[in-house]
Length: 393
Image (cartoon, rainbow, N blue to C red; front, side, top):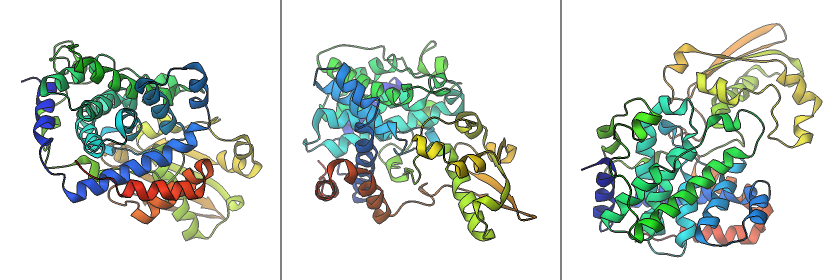
């Protein structure tokens, strides 16, 4: 059997099995976090512009806009080992086809389990040029959509095969100021819905598209281990090990932010007293998230004199030891020089990572902080209660 067929066989078999309570709980957490990321993204570009550009209100358009919105303000979830944000494309696709369907939560889990494994297998070699949320996200969206539609095993395999050839999202698209990055997540959600709907009607894909000589793995990666990518399906649920963001920016900066805050508190210094901040971290963090003139924040924040002065004192670099542990560990070594003394701190992980997770209460606080200003506090609380009650089918 080809890789897509093996994933489809697992999904078809698991459809009749009960969802473990712990897995269901983590799936609800992922859906709550998706809504937290979604709402602030719906009232800014590119979602507001997409609504004007795309008049049709079919499932594919809804998936595109919601997928983009959920990735816009950079607070959506992360699967650390896959260097990948699964929620934005996966949940957007499932939501567009049937938030009210009894198998919605199961579809989310299926999308996460299949796509996170593909993402982890593709690894750093893929992340060199490609934006995983756009490429790997296609598989999460297609799998979730296929499950929502209850496709047969054969149809499910063809949905995955078709969406593989839709996968595209270049990192260069966000190496300068543009709206392309969230569009990657939206396009992945749309592609997944399209592939699943097409497969339902009999559209076929190349079943060896993943492992073939000129397929996804070889063209966009470095000889991925597909046996490893298939291991643990139905036993080891990746959705239980998600990272939920604790800061509204790129996750590559989180360990440095957490470390700097802890070190500042330990030293008892104020920003104006700091002479220099040295940050050593993994290579992707420096390459993707180091901007001398970042544009993706509100002008009052970006132009604040105290913020600009502190920014000029930050010196990032690649730490070979920490780079060797990426992506399974996201660490930073932070040193602050202030008032004639220098102290250093190793931040081994990020608040929100699986080994330092947000509690349910902290996740609720994040959701309310982000959703209430958009839909109102009462509506946000009502929806939150409803999301915690999502049933498994």
